[in-house]
Figure 1: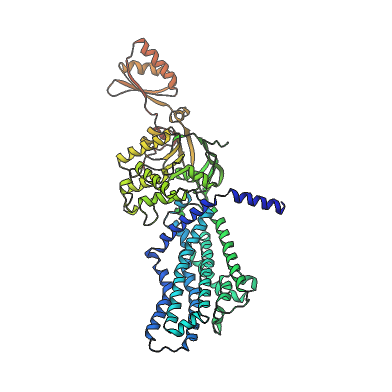
Figure 2: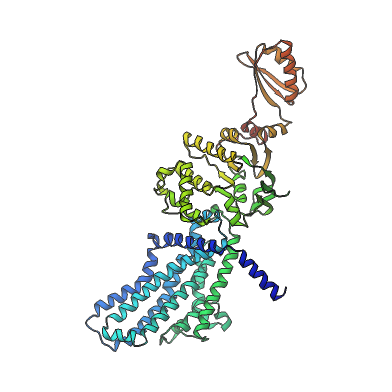
Length: 291
Length: 316
């Protein structure tokens, strides 16, 4: 088949698709999933994962309120970088995404409600996209709000010096970078955990394996590192952490890539995993008794 | 077996759960009307319905519903409504939302979805309680709200797994009337039930299942006729019952002719009902016997069940 024929067929296929219906269905799916997953008491532990650093910084701000020195700004910038890179990217976002994205399908199997999603005129690929976007909205909203709160609490206590650091110095650029990396982390981990939930009845153990892989990936060859989420996140972090010893494995950038390539690389990896999810969802059957 | 745009076709369908048989080599086609799937627990009724609606996939064979398959979900699920036996609901949902949001997934706008939701709630008798959380509903109400969801988009094929379970007599009668009304509009209604008397009364045809096999399929009387090797019972209420019994015994195909306890009739078991009716006509015209009523005594699903499966198919 020539490239021209293939392009013509693709155009023909594209014209035949009910894109408006797909968009409407995705919007309903996102709305339903967000309501089901965000506003529920069972998700309190995810709020806590996001808010623990905020509470710690708030406590530090209150206790240390009489001991503020402008020179501390650089020090606190390192602390914030440590919180984002070591806590949020390695633990907070990781486990929250595990909780949110594995529950999207697996939760419906446990609650015996997935058949309702399979009995409506929605293509299963659309179901995957809708649920993934809902999970992404929840995770991104929660963690971006938490990082914004951390950032505000960290610099607001410095008054004019803090304001100057943020708006006249590197602060605002760091904030945008953190928000971008947080969103990418949610998308990347989200895709991974969505796939795990479709592959395994109990995705917890594979999740722990993924966590181990993310930690040790830097010691593997470059091509293998590209299969880890943190490989793409680390080059985008605006502040490098001066960590030495074994813990440096969490911050070292073994194979530096340009930021734009890191963004595109992570998005490509996420899309590839979502395509796998689309194949997996077609194999899925409603057999609640086997759960 | 070819698929017809009006038929539901099972073409040599088998489903295995690992080594466990779900259904085996099922082939039949259904015309519009009410079809009942009858069989004891574990006979494969729900498996057949789940296969039909694509919730599970056949290990072999093909299924067509009005020429469509579940691999074309947009077209397929606009035609099909399935009220499953799963008594579970999305957490926190109320009756109205339970119907409204799936309609939005069908692509209906908010006004049209609201209209269809209210209509379905009315038809299922749930309009008054639509605002309440489903978690607070009785079993019968949960059954009816699922039914309302299944019919809300006006499907051409309505699949109902034990739809009368948990309903009080009034709701049961209303549901049966609803199924009949839907079938009269030229639609397919496929019902599984263990309440054989109700199924018997409303069905246009029956599919009898046992241990994953279809043991008989067709109109109840046709199925009964196919079971020629088993004598059919005919109850004759008449005067001079001993004369009739004696005459009946002369026929080779009559296995038994039992005079009723009150002496005003005979229960005949025959392998050839048509021949017996000819004999009866002769006796009546000779004036020996005066007949009040003649009726098949075992022309219902329950009797078929006893013949075919050795079970009464009653509730387990």
